[in-house]
Length: 293
Image 1 (cartoon, one colour):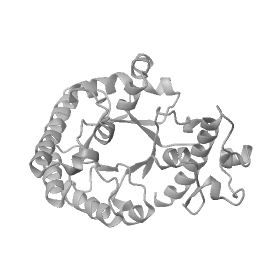
Image 2 (tube, one colour; image 1 turned 180 degrees about the horizontal axis):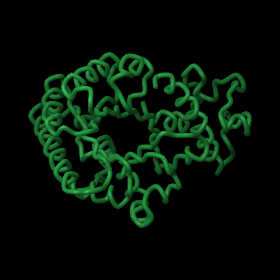
Image 3 (cartoon, rainbow, N blue to C red; image 1 turned 45 degrees about the vertical axis):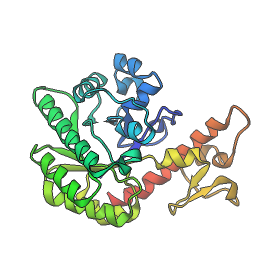
């Protein structure tokens, strides 16, 4: 199972790969646009632009659009895929429509309309990829807000016989529901295609589905670091103000800058110490998730 870390330029996450050995990173095209980095990345390619040579999974930007109403994702499925090809990424999620934020509270009729659009976008992406001799691997994202809708979408996308699928709209769901959905998806798509879980790195979940999942991603390290939280070796997140002392840690930050992860920093230096916390948290997160490979 590959472990992808979410990397955000808003505010900028540290270049984790300069501190840690990573399988890959997930980058939102919407956030690249928000920070006016997309044009610069298109000129050089995202690998060279970030100086990262592991796997890069380009997210469609749909999450930011529907959770925060940013309207940053590409206008069409084809535009997204063309940009992904120019960026030289390894994987790209098709232009999916997640059931997060305001989409969770929409009337049933509107939810079904969006699901049909999600399926249509996947078919457009499939035909686009089929016509190309090279380019990123398209990951087709299965969406749904209920068992009925999930089955409907999964059966439609399974007909594409794609090599890589992903399961979305898992944010905030209890572990037992996520586990149930993974089993349901695997029953429909079979054992051959790869399956990615978006934002699902809960150890309870992974302990139950590790044999059915090929990759996961997590933004926990980034979010917790910005919230002044420190991840411990047992997976707990503790606010740095409530820590009684330094923790025993062999991560690159603690090894070289002992105690830095519990420092606020003077004005103008807070982001520097936030970044060190994020690296520490990423190390602890990966160490925890590697048990489920």
